View 1: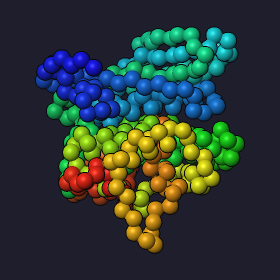
View 2: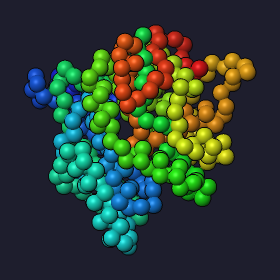
View 3: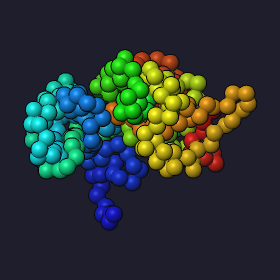
View 4: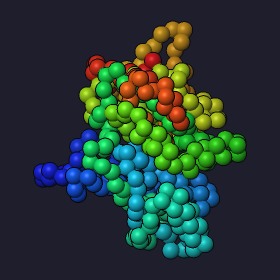
Length: 310
């Protein structure tokens, strides 16, 4: 893309960050993001609410507060309008929960349903969190469990248990607002939310932007109920393999027999997440006091590879 200099752009697309940040005054900057996707669950209301939580997450990942949103909709003309009403209602109520006002939006006719939001938030220019701030010596903390993509695939194949689906949906419906508020109480240096590129894909972006190596310990990761079982059964979404092909060249897996990483666990490192958690790089001294998250590794000086799996 052509590039033009603008001193007010605090975060642009150069580092593949979660949202753009534009300074308005010395005390105020805008955080802007957009996200939409096809249905991930059968219930229209839940789909709308998850789409809203997912779009809001990018603002929280920058340390911002969402204030307004514009709806994005692609809708098949012959689809039942009652489904559309439920999607819009689910999204609107989740936005209201976040204290974010829907100002309007745009829709087009399409053969495939797509729904989401463009969200605007605010942040103090001096308190912007980006994926480029991770420092050697930091601890890595993650705020949700992994496995929404595998569980959604297992549901499509008819092998997912309802309790496992319910746990995955509950995770996707949970706003990252509380995690953001907790994050701002600590000495956080970098943050990104983990969504479609999976844990390793988004960790890759943080490592490259920060010019460090992120070491992730698989025995510290937490997975949604059923995720490991479904991955072992081969319920792997197409996006998972795409993520693996894209990110694996920068990954070093430290293999030590007899504790070799099981293939289903390795696969889940690339599982595309919807409305996933925040991956946070913060001072080691603050990691044990961080509530609402758990350690998954540490930040190292840049080595041969951007990601080291142990």
